[in-house]
Image 1 (cartoon, rainbow, N blue to C red):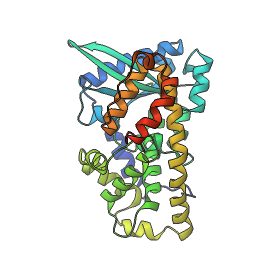
Image 2: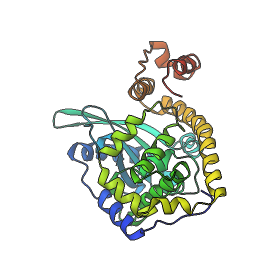
Image 3: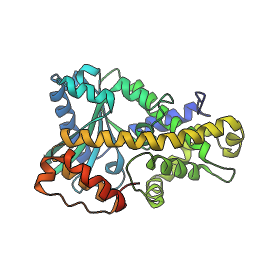
Length: 319
């Protein structure tokens, strides 16, 4: 949207965000989050208690998937850009196509827990979830419930504000896709589905509905805190120019977002241990299209992608 918009009930939104961030993530998630924080600190070449500003858990590991059965998702937000890595190429990669993505696992109570974790500076994260950033990659993820698993003293307020910003950005950008018959649940559904179209994902409407069904009261309360109880009134406040620009912005997001997704996938093939297999797993998980990789394709994922990407596209692995 053209202007910076504040939530209808900022105190209510803050209360909801603080409560959600403080919700325990579970012993398995917290155990592997500790390994992730240590690994990120090691990559930074420093003390993780100082280099890492916060660790956020998000996604299916907070909803209905155990880390023992899949991959737990984390964001490790670094206190400073220099803490991203001792490797200048890795720092440059994060600036060009954030975040940097890595793999970590740990043994916990006789089980191997696996995760992928994204790394970027807190300041960059704050910008990426704000209304200054057009691409929804970050604000779409953190408009959904997340857990603040670890935070360095002094960074708590910035984390709460960043998550509030992600939610406001998500819902107000979703308004331009709504109509007079839309309610709060429909607004979330419409916005989520629109964000899927900005990545190399082939998600159905059922996926978005499932996410919303895991915590419907929270989503409803958050929407009311951001856009108000009367959604029709919020839509009426949009001028014709704002509505048209909002729709135009979504078209641009789809084109730019897919290009950024390709860059991130290429990066993941290099930084993610077993990166090629992870990408194949990710594609199959989201689209149902199985990807069988040869040994050569695992060793040369970038060259292999030249042949694989068009083939997977026509098979419906992404749109």
